[in-house]
Length: 77
Image (cartoon, rainbow, N blue to C red; front, side):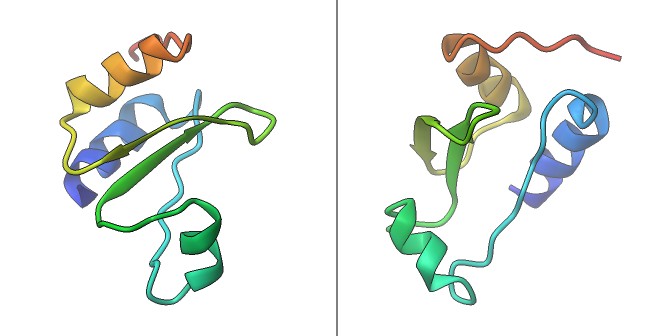
């Protein structure tokens, strides 16, 4: 997922914030977001409300589709 998230940040980083968390080092966050498997992507709105959570690998295109499903439309550079 690192490469996909790097590419996503490069293309859309001015529109959304991408944070990576090492759940082994941040067990409190892992519990808060109920992370059981890695990778887990948690989608939040600007107020910190969870829009959805996806477990497993997602391609760049799949991430964009998920965001659109949550009502977030991104514009490409």
